[in-house]
Image (cartoon, rainbow, N blue to C red):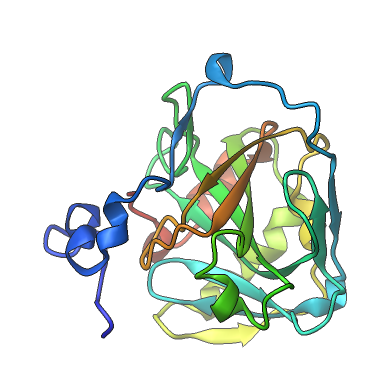
Length: 234
């Protein structure tokens, strides 16, 4: 049985546990990252992200945000290394963007929110499909990238320019030849923990890899996002 959800008084995060009991589980995301309370693990490896620009296929308004999809039936856009074992394929990326500059990100650092947070979603190829991987404890790996107000980001502009074509829920259009790696910061230093999807079904199947260095977005780019694109938070 499927359950509807949203961010309003009757279907918002406070109500999600009614339809998705795992909302009260032990590894729910997002979390507040407190750097002073983290520990260094010398066994963790550097991240290796190999993305093929020709794998980007479309951009979709799913009613809660938008997402850019990728071909994921071959190992051509992958994440390896870091805290994960094996090969994870890039499925999609999406943004959580707030109505104001002081909120928007799902994760926080020392209690402070960023205007936006990018999520690059990957699935473990030891499972037959994304759907099956999403229900396994090691099924997904999501790279989180914070956005901060600063210089204009030309690499982000192609994404923002496409939003005008998908103004209503279910709208979808071609989005080709995009290298998702261009959205990453110079440094790939990260925090990691075992968590969950941040929206229903809230499955506790995500290895979170949250990059320490944010990328920039200009005030003009920040203000240019459509009003329908504003994300409310868990």
